[in-house]
Image (cartoon, rainbow, N blue to C red; front, side, top):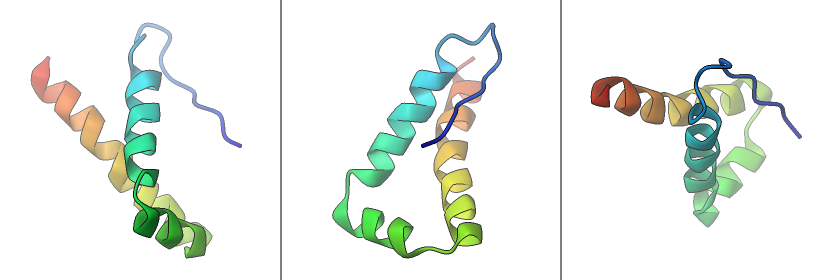
Length: 61
């Protein structure tokens, strides 16, 4: 379980984050890697996954 806290004025950010997470865990190998990761490895992997959609949105704006 987790909580997403995003800026009030950014309606699409939570959807972008959830979509990135869904893409990340859609592959069995990636799910297994995340399940076996330490807390630090998991946090690092999630940061990498979440950087991609926010960087793409920034470039599009």
